[in-house]
Image 1 (tube, one colour):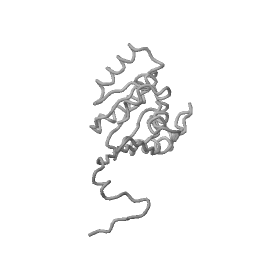
Image 2: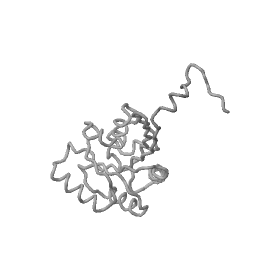
Image 3: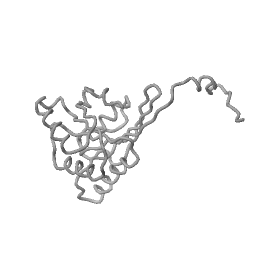
Image 4: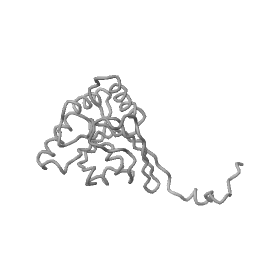
Amino acid sequence: MPRLSTGPNSTPPDAVADSEPTRCGYVALIGAPNSGKSTLLNRLVGHKLAIVTPKAQTTRTRLLGIAVEGATQIVYVDTPGILAPRRQLDRAMVAAAWSGTADADEILLLVDASRGIDEDTRRILDALRERGRRSILALNKIDLVRRDRLLSLADALSRQGSFDPIFMISGLQGDGVKDVKL
């Protein structure tokens, strides 16, 4: 029979048996540059972990943030913005972004609603379709866009990919972010 630790930092065996089962998930945050991935990561984990600047491609490698709620632990992966690579550095960052999705339980595509479906977003939609991955869609920066435009954008995006669910959020203001916490 294995010996159990009885030190001051150990959990009594009865407490472990009666506790709620622990759940863990891995969520990759992807999107075009400056779609708000790092801002959303900071909101989801509850503190400033990722650097946020108006400069595109501030995030150059994957960054992990962990959120714990009750017996659930979610590992969020902030990835570099996905764009048409022009230089070797761009190619490396795009590869890092897609590699962040490889082991993810869920992919959350963040789209800047104020920009709509631009060329970078279209390229991401095509790549997701090719990979056959169902994703979560979050329209970000909703505080900058009229409601009727948001609804038509959500409709257009839902016809171009397999998204379930679809969220409308403002990572900066925090609107709707609580709903995204999976």
